[in-house]
Length: 225
Image (cartoon, rainbow, N blue to C red; front, side):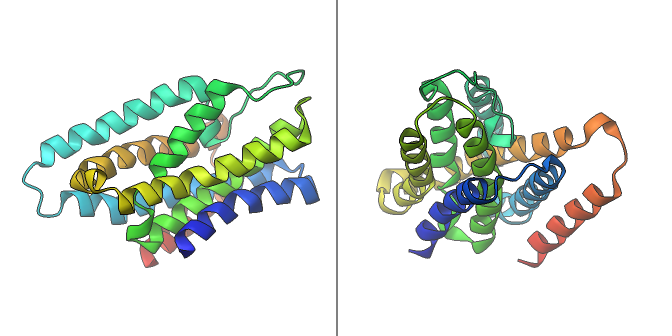
């Protein structure tokens, strides 16, 4: 049960930070994104990858599913405009939630919920990933002409998507039959999102000691967990 509560709480924590504190320091948010990207990448490599390839007689087919996940995330980003890794571009005059943006984010959120209940590391990785994304999403929505009530409802629905994916993976037998294939798909999604965050956070390809230390810290914590 705590898996569901924590994944929901991550979105509300990110949203509340924006509602209450209205943070304006983009440097801190960039560092938080870099930490989340490094942690998600490390936990994928340390936990998820070994699991799907362990005692796997169809390793190449598993690799195909990972590539499908990478390509699927690329397609989703075409509609979400990169919101999964910190970029949301909305017309500030808009009065309604862009449907394609929300649907693509919802699909991403549902899929990332599938492997959560297997290890605490993946749960922590998803939580760390969702907090800055929720902050960015809330910030951009508040800067539009969308009603506050609609924004709150949208965030609530978004918060429920990842637990929905976890519920489906736990209680639907048809999904459990294809457990490794689905997890390989999610690995591809995580690899794409996390590496994009890390590459894009390196603005101007300049060496940044603080960012490097943040990435190393995230990797070390992921390894220990």
